[in-house]
Length: 255
Image (cartoon, rainbow, N blue to C red):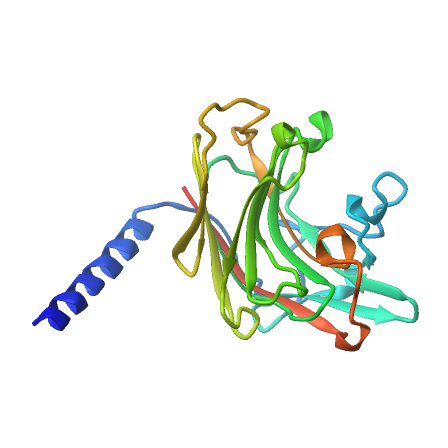
């Protein structure tokens, strides 16, 4: 009898979750269909960040190129590789094409393994050109570094932390690179909550909210990239792993 009750409870909870999701309005989605990146939704970021932000501000090693971004079998595929003495990878964003304020984000992705890799699903404030970083705010929906296998990072960067990674939660996920996972964020005026495969991992909601402690009351845009090395990815890179690929199946935004 106890087992039956537990099973019924599980079904009810699942139905409640599905009903709650269905009650939200889907305002934007990207399923990466077709054979090329939809340039009405996305822009490429290319180069090594120089001269203004060499190493993209983190001493990263890769040069970003459009050639390392493709659409294959309904996935955005970002490839990291080493050619000669240089590392190459891809980075895209929705700046000036899709930006939103508050809502629920779901991203289904499969992460690459390998020491030195640093894939990320993240967001920046659309006002970054006017106020700079970290005043714009940064939301890291998912970060993974190959030197810390089976660990996912959720983080927020704010002016109060001087951009440092103080507001962070690491979550162990067994065999995280062996299959697809859904990374979710629920963002409101007062809190940002992260989930991995529908399990809540971290809620950020400082007691006192201001532009310095909670710069998350304006629109943000998406960034997807696969970095190599860097301050977070680690100074050591295992060159034997290349090429490696980061797969993003879909992104959905609900209000």
